[in-house]
Length: 255
Image (cartoon, rainbow, N blue to C red; front, side, top):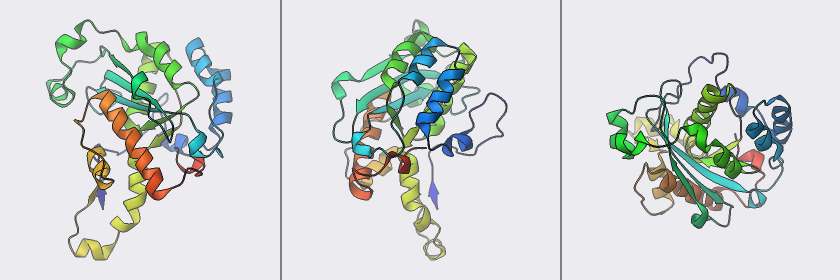
């Protein structure tokens, strides 16, 4: 057994919602981007897809990456909104802290007191903050041509899709390297051992902080979008160093 810090139970997918199972079946994201560029109506999305993406066989060492984190008012993209975005360009060998970007945005759904306790962004801070639509141009420029690194794709990919669908009438698709999923792969077989369960071995946590601890990475204060982006970036580097190789093709890592 292993446990998540977010509910991964996938609801029935209605028309217009992001179908994670469909995205996980895509291997040729380069071809998918070409198809999406033809279909996209918004010029910003057309430019994003036109920038392309690495081919599936590209070694991870040669892939430009962007570590991305959203803080939100809750966990359901249909009912909650984005309150902050942090992103940090990186490669397997370098994390570019100096050019990290951070935005606070005003969600169209109410900011819950319970979420303020988690991410620390208050009603006062978002009162004069821009709408998510106002940062889309700059965010898509940061993302263009890069593969996203996230810790739990059910937040960043799903919330981004929903935010654009509500504002532009069309969502977004992109591949991600999900560091939570990579940890789940490592512990899944071990977790299912009946003998381990019989002996009362505790489940393995694949939360970001707990995953980092297994690699002797330092503790950072969670739920700050830029810090969490850095945390995921460092975790990916450690995962590749311990369990994969710089030559690992990107199709073995992305979903």
